[in-house]
Each structure stands twice: as C-alpha cells, then as structure tokens.
Image: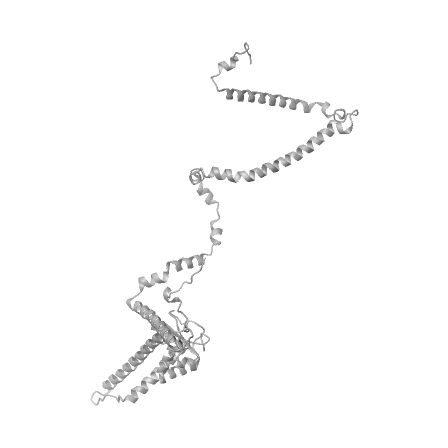
Length: 204
Length: 164
C-alpha cells in the first residue's frame, strides 16, 4: 500500500467506493490478522522439520538450571494450559447450560415450526420408520373401547334404537316403583323414629 | 382414567342395583304373579270345560265352581309357581317385570326347600309382605323367618351363585 504525501488519502482507498470509516478500520484489522496468521502458518510448516528443534542442547541446555530450561518451561506451560482449557470448557458449559434454553426459546418462539416441519420434513418417511404394531400392542385396546362405549352410553343407544313401547313402559314402571319405595320408606321411617329422636335408617 | 362399568341398566337406576326392594315394587310384582296364576287357572278351567263339551256335547254340565275349590286351586298353583320360579331363576314373572330378584342372605339363589317354604308362607300370609315397609332392611315377615331378601336387579339374567 503506497502512501502519498502526508495528510493525503492512500491510492487504493481512492479506488474503492466511499466506505464509512468504521468499515475501513475493520478491513485493515482483518488484513493484519490474516497476514499474521499466514506468517505464523508458514513458520509452523517449516520449523517442525528442523533437526535443531529436536536436539537436547536446545531443550535442556546444561548452562541453565533445570527450572529455567525450555523443556521445563514448556511442560509447565502445557500443564497450565490444560488446566485453563478444562476450566474454560467448564465455564463455557455452564454458560451454555444457562443461556441455551433461553436463547432457543427466544428463537423458536419466533419461528413457525409446524410450517417449517411440513415444508422441509418428509413426514411419511419418518412415520414409515415407526413400528406402529409395537405401539398399538402397548395400548390396552379393550379398556379404551370399554371406556368409549361407556362414554357414549351404547346400551342407551341400543335401547333407544330398538326399544319397544313395552320395554319403555316396563322401565318407567320400575323407576316409578323405586321412587315410590323410597318415598314410602322415608315417610314411614320418619314417622316411626320421630318420637324416639333417632334418625331414619336409609335402606341403601 | 376412571373406568366406568358398561351396563345395560340405565344410569339412573344403577345405584339401586343389589339394594333391598321396597314395598310398592314388591306389591306390584305380587299382584302380577297373582294375575299370572289366576290367568293360568282360568285357561286350564276353560280348557277343561271345552274338553268336556267336546267329549260329551249332549250331557254337558259346567264343572263345580265352589269358592273353596277355586281358593284351594289358586293357593296350590301359587305355591308351585313361586317355588319353581324362585328356585330355578330367583324370579317370578312379576319379579322379572319389576326388576326384582329373591336372594338368600349370602346373595345366591334359594335352595328348593327354602323357595318352597317361602312360597308357602307368601301364599298363606301374603299380608306379611307389608312388613318390609316398616323394617329398616326392607324385609318382609317371610324374609325374616327364612333369611331371604328381595333386591333390585334389572339385569336380564339373575346374578349370584346358585344356592342349590
């Protein structure tokens, strides 16, 4: 990048469309980071092949005390790094545990999941993988059917559809009989026990 | 889920099933039984008259219809009818119409002798039925003597183990 006289705009930037200053700063920073990474990678690619790095004279020079030798320092750094990595992973995990449900809830509440699934998921294929026989075998069908029949009162439907005037009359006579039985029992028990002060005994 | 039992009995009558029946229902059942026995005797009488008329049309005379004979015939016909009805099914025709069942104290059907004794007592002293209006457990005098009970049972078939 060539810079002209002091206080003038670089030529490259003149060639670019007019950008806000913040974008220019970001672009420059990214360029620096990219260049640094490129240099670093080039060094890393070349250095490991050097025999000098594997020599004991480099890692354990005799003129240095053990505590200051590169091997000792690197080992200590590796130990600290491992500890730091574990601690960071733990903290990141805790943060994820705390924030993930809230974030997911936030995102999901803004999505039409049903529509998404309908458009993008082949539901027939999913259902084809389900063992429906096993699922049905786990259901107590007899109990379900009995409950349904009880809820819709099937006997009443059969009675209503096939019942004759005679059976209606008989049912009415029976219910009337029960009502009269109760009325007589209560009247007599009330009259009998009124003087004794005891409550009437209900037969049921 | 709360399981509701499937029953042919209407929901309004289910709570009464198996409970002692009252005097009104039992009285109606007894009247129906008496009418059945009376109709049965009348049919037999007219059948007998028709047979005599066919066999001797010239010298036909109506059979003796004294009150004592009619009463005795009705009494024994009632005893026989009720004995077999209560012994075999726990129900007479009147009981069946009114949804009743005669059971022993253990809830089963009556033994033959128990059914016969109950039928005899009912025929001899029918007014003993009225005691069930006063008795807290709705027992007639015959029920108290023979340790039986009459319960509501609207199911088509009589329930409970056979007593014989």
